[in-house]
Image (cartoon, rainbow, N blue to C red):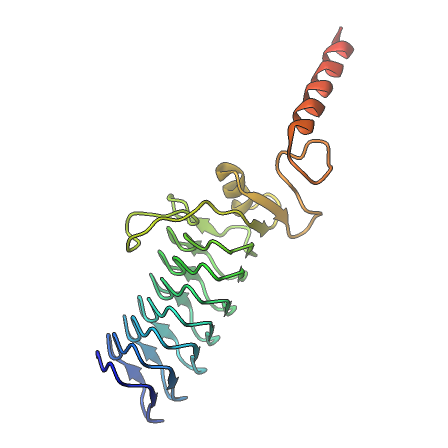
Length: 238
């Protein structure tokens, strides 16, 4: 903890657990080799390891704790093993260089603020087994262009998962400007409509909400199109 000059570390192949806060604030740590024997990464284990750029969590690691990689501002990519069943609260919060993350099929839940302020993340796919998404899970992800949610029944926290919430550590976030991609009629579809987010169906042609005339944009021509249709309908009724 707080070994400010530690640059690299190779952990022994017999290690099964990295304890809470083990490498907290090791700001010069660039490389870490995690052993294949690893089963658990504790809460805040690599919190605020600013120089860490890439992490491969070995197969067999089933638990990654809260804020385990929070504040790793140079972390660009991470590989999460298939044995992992959840992304805990704040696991990658503040990883504002994170561009790529593959969420494995066995993950069932995405915790509160899990990817908060990951503003270099371009897209994320939540596989079929993801059942719930915590509040603020993707808030502050300014470059997030696509959020794919494969499970029709995936539930959402009552707070907006894409906007800043009070329990995420400081800062604010811009409104989500990307596209939610999910099955038509799904909870994600309802969520997108409720919050005014762009929605594309996984099983149909893309849907742009408000594009009444089908020209691929939303503008005053759509309002005119609707007004004209209403006028025609009234004429028919007369």
